[in-house]
Length: 544
Ligand SMILES: CC(=O)SCCNC(=O)CCNC(=O)[C@H](O)C(C)(C)COP(=O)(O)OP(=O)(O)OC[C@H]1O[C@@H](n2cnc3c(N)ncnc32)[C@H](O)[C@@H]1OP(=O)(O)O
Ligand SMILES: O=CC(=O)O
Ligand SMILES: [Mg+2]
Image (cartoon, rainbow, N blue to C red; front, side, top):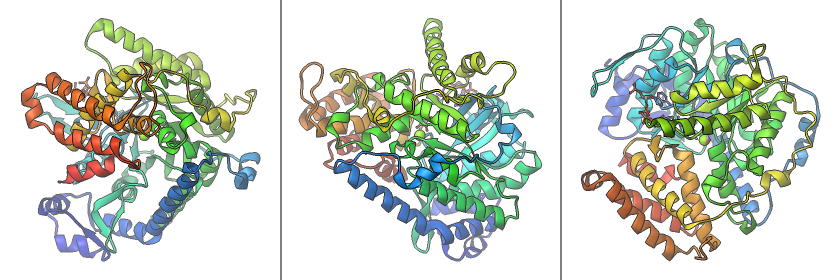
């Protein structure tokens, strides 16, 4: 639909669309970017953008203390919140049964497949599984809008296969980007706006009416929080928007991912700040491992082993999952488990092993008392449901009644204790190999990719590259006696790049962007200071 550009930009006078001529055309032609959307974005920026900047500064300050030797801890100032009795507001009916949630990117085919799948919830992801190109952001929003309107089909140009949204599709939740990300295509008073504000406002404004009409509501996943003060910001934004649209307080509901090490120490406080709008916390296990490495990067005594050893039954991960369940259920909130990164295989024997592995992984979560969990692929839904049904039983839709009251308190020591396991040459090489392939895919616009039978997304790739960085920094000694140095990693990187070339073939290698990915990866793992998020330098390549 052609829309008047001037209207679009001047209705929100402090807001400007940036980018190439093509980016402007995308914005002009999209009917999810209308004056009402701009006006909401502008108001949210006017009231809250400065606060994001302050909160990010506070993150950096806290990190400085940890870099100097302090350890993350439960906050003395908020003891009263942890010690007193209160509960979150009630949970909407359609969110009481979340035993399996399918996560997926927001392209049209996967939105249809995801909503049609047998999961209770489809988590449409603008974060770890999306490269934030303007085109993908806008078309993703259009796809969700069409899905909510129930007016959605798609014919795949390559296969000619026709897809249509079913009437009784899963509940839709929208994951917005983290507070650390900026949306470069939109500036408020000359500054790129917080990407989370863009995702939230566009989704909310275009869909809230239809969602309410259908008997559901705007449901959000909020990622990568690091403190309850960040949760307080979201609470203020939700309340501001509810008032602006004259909606009953608590209409907007969110689930917060607890996927940073600082946040695990503030779960009660996060629930408390958001008590009118929150329904659950989720164990974002992959970013949590990344955050453990990043937060404790200077602590030589807390270096993790190879990624494969950091499973949910490792003591630090188990403590995190059990504390999340206990904290949530005490407050009447649901506790959602994390992503099983395996994806099904076409080889029957392999697939059987994968399904058993996923079943066991989900059983650990269900045993801890989680109310549901995430899967990356629809082929894993049934096995995950089976694992949860054993615990939830026929008479319940969740495990909110499991309070874990008899557990010994979970201490900071347990949460911070690194797990045992080897640090191997094979581990470094696998990290390099996966990171190379992942970054190559990411800068080409694909943020969730199958690599060696696992779903890799921004969170898992972060583990790979920060782990290598930390092993170099502390000159870790590998199980074969080698010391990890910049020189060693550089030589391994060259060898792994050659292996990738052999694997993908000369043609794909030549026309892909593998060498650019290698340069970016080298810069990140050999840097003197750890780069905060790989998506920051990678975005420059995506945009270019
Ligand atoms: C750590 C975290 O942040 S986790 C959350 C973010 N990550 C994600 O959301 C990852 C979601 N998963 C995916 O993106 C995909 O499953 C991948 C990339 C891992 C694998 O995808 P594919 O290679 O397409 O898998 P495969 O070919 O087996 O897919 C079979 C069908 O299922 C569909 N499908 C697979 N996964 C999904 C999904 N998560 N959502 C919707 N549809 C899906 C495919 O589109 C395909 O459809 P088709 O048969 O109609 O063509
Ligand atoms: O977002 C999920 C995670 O595991 O990270
Ligand atoms: Mg994550």
